[in-house]
Amino acid sequence: MTGSIPYAKATMTDKTEVEALAEPDYWSRPLVERLRERAALARIEGTGTAVGDAVHFEEAAAEITDLRDKLASAIKERDSICEKAVEKTFALDAAEARAAEAEAESDRLRLALEPFAREADNAGGLVLGPDTDDWTLNHHKLTLGDIRRARQALKEQTP
Image (cartoon, rainbow, N blue to C red; front, side, top):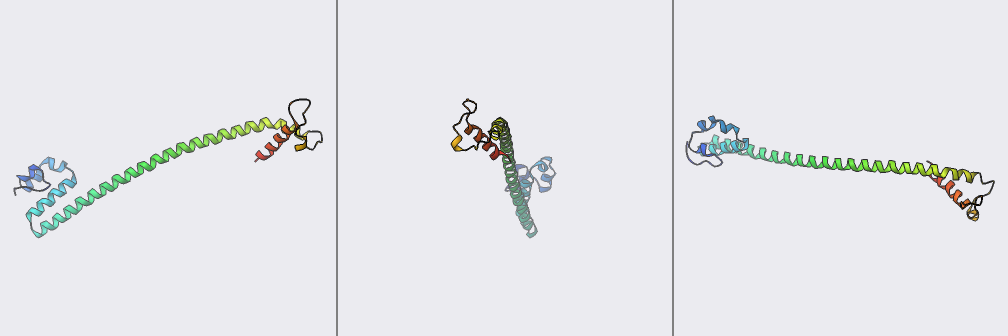
C-alpha cells in the first residue's frame, strides 16, 4: 500500500501498514495522532469494515482530544480555586490578627479605665450626672464627668 495518506507521517506513505507499525517511532507518537493515521489508512482501504473502523478511530481521537481539553480546563479551574482559597486564608489570618490586636487594645483600655470607674463608685454618695460633670476631684483637672464616663464605658464594654 503506497501513496499519500492524510495525517500520516512520511514513513507511512511508502511502506506497508504492517512495516510502518513495526517501526519503534510509530508507538512513541501520541495516541490521537496514531488513531487519525489508522483512520486515514482504513479509509484508503475502502471496505465497509475498514470505513467503519475509520469512523471509530476518528471518534476515539476526537473524544480523547475533548477529554484532554476538559481535563486541562478542570485543572486550570482547580488551580484558580486553590489560589483563591490561599488568598482567602491569608486574608482570614490577617483579619484574625487584627481582631486579636483590637481585643488586646480593648483589654488594655479597660484596665486603664477601671481606677476611674472605681472612683466614680466611691464618689461619696454624690449622684453623678450631667449637672455634676464639671466638678473637679480634689482640685485636679479630673472631673466627676470624666470618672462617670469611664464607669459608663466599662459597663458598655463588659461582655
